[in-house]
Length: 566
Image (cartoon, rainbow, N blue to C red; front, top):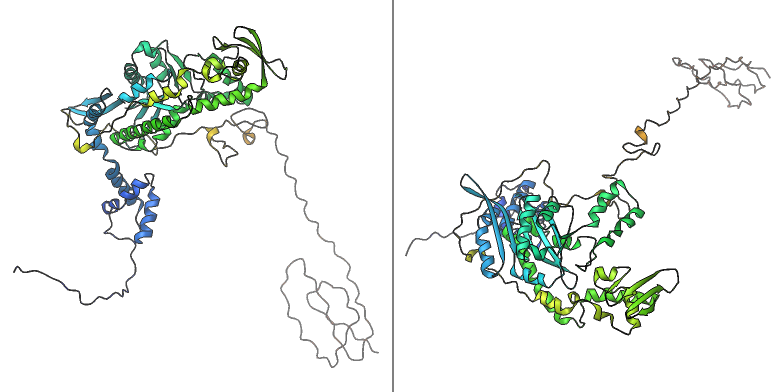
């Protein structure tokens, strides 16, 4: 039998007299990261201060900020993956997308430097996105957002609108920076996926204040219609021309819209909504981010197919709600039949408001019907006059059948990295980090009018100063050159010296036969004099009370009152 070493515990002394140590050197970031993986999966936005509080509560140990930050970085790599590893397998991921979703488009662009390949750009457009866009209106919103990791970059997106007037992502790309070159590269691939320049020339593109996007569209699609988000335009407009009246006039730009896209939106909210959905994914490595976007869209497609089966009407719910509002407002309008299907519709209050409505051509003076595709209250009043249904005048873009066609395309699942096919392309290194001055920022820079103090009053950050005296900008009343000079301070009046008064003669009163001693009460002199010791009092045989004391006299030593015989 082999020799074994066995230890047996015979006695334990559980009484300790040493003090508790909060800084334990055996605790390191690697051990702490293994305890944070499950917490990070449940709460990806876990903060460093939360990690320190958790360690203190659970193990009664203090950890520094740097150790908590290193532990979080290691835990994030275990949960989301390593940045370096995912950049090195970007070609393998693109091959897996093409294998699982045939007909999709993926493009990888790298830059060589001394034989090494550095990541530059990545483009992805799934086959389901292309098929869904065929059943949608020719309207696309373009936008870009920052990536919130240490390597930086931009995520360019193209988002359409489905039959229920909801967002429909089409494609996305990761680029190094946002400029004309990157937008041109992204739009060239997008135009090829949507059918070429001839088809895309009929699209309407809406965008924000994107750098280089306007010249890129003009060079690729010179005949395409473009719109700009009114929110961003007004943010610049209000800097020089504030006021609600000018804001109302500015929104009349809708009158210049063309009716082809059947969309009268003034803001690029669909793209902003998609950016908000992927805000957590934008801080992850590239493969994890793209997979989270693909997984979200795959689940969204399944939900849309389930919702389409539960709809009981032939019109999509959002469009039906807008049509019901117009039908309710049509009771305030009176149609007058002219000929065929031409009407003159006026308000019931006879205030002079009236419009011409042609039901055959779906055209009338107000142009709302032709811009949105939904009959407005004036058109509904004329349609009701002919005992027709307003739903019959809606285009096929807003019907349930079109909504089902949009979601019928399938986004197929993908395998994990452990079963990917290793391509012959060389490993790709992460892009060079761009170190910008200042602390790295993860939040969007807000405008001055977006910063609320308490929900009711905005801050003065970023606002131009205006003087309340001269009404000029650039300074306030404290530094105004026209500020009136302050009055000189008044000189204080010197105190007057008291005049010496005559000393009164002490008066005597008749007293008892026994001699008494009365002490006069001295007043404090104007100038301090050294005090003198008063003589001891004369012993009295019988206390008597003086009927009256003489007025005080300024003297340094008390005097005795004279005795008067009875």
